[in-house]
Image 1: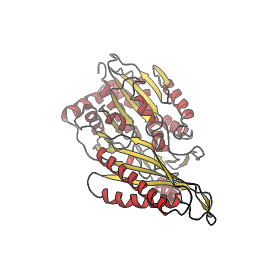
Image 2 (image 1 turned 45 degrees about the vertical axis):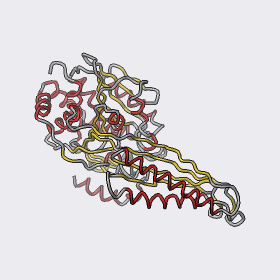
Image 3 (image 1 turned 135 degrees about the horizontal axis):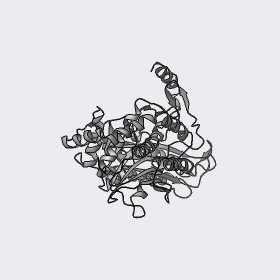
Image 4 (image 1 turned 60 degrees about the horizontal axis):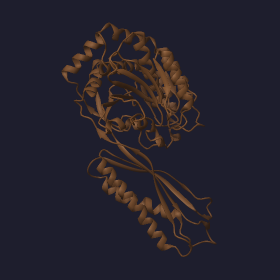
Length: 441
């Protein structure tokens, strides 16, 4: 522990290099509130955890500890930005095959899926972690080891989640646990950034097998869980004009000036709107355009992220953005002294659905009961994860923590260390088997 603390102080000096891909980490949306499993579900979890098969699976997970660490390093060092997950997906698929899945395939959009057949095959339960990270392809993802801590972009979010998924499958096979329902072990694409949940969205279309219950692995320590989805809209707004020399063409409408006004108008009205009511946020995360200091830009753009606990507020702050953009467009076209008018394009680049599932839902209760079995009080909250999609459709879904200790997600100095991470793997297995039903427990 001493080595870890000194290492963290050293790496803290480099925090200024944080990558600005997202102003709010998906797994840190909501600190959560204390949840409580009902007595019946606690009893079910405790009895299941005491069975010989589950105890054998728990021992298997403990025995995998070094292997899991090695695989975490190996997978982390395979870059996987959104839309470029293929190489990591191939390696993940081979791990699922080696673990003993009945069949493994990659679907049309790139999701890696492994099937473990159930006895009755009347339902399907999925255990998921996303393949992608926020980091561009050229990012140095070489894992650096300092004491007991691993440093690398993406090592926690969400590579450790992938390791958890494989470890659960391996433990089920080694303990010869048979479930009533089919179980899918999935590595999804496009969870981060402009990926816009494309992997999980595809899985809940009529082009994919029916999924009755969804368990995502994303987020922090054992105990953290989400049964509520935080909705978001993302836009790329682009002002366009003829452009020209800053002196010779002075008087043309300027896209950069219009963009600045749009941001100003939006931030003023959005600030007032978001101070009351359901929690809602807004952020201009990226801006760009122009060719030189002495040129009138021909194009100026921004990328905007808006989030809310309820769809109504999200739609309202969305309308404020669009009204602000149009106000800026009209104002700067009225100011021009010559040349054509500016135009603007407002393109939606992200749409994450929101929703809530009740805490008395069996899957949510089973997850809380499993966590409680390990002596931890569950924290139930709202997140922006793969569970958003099934939650919005009313399909039982929950997001569990991947375990261990980690911080600086979405930053170059992200770190993770194995603080009893095996417990989170065991809790995920217990939740999965509870939901899928164990044959002859």
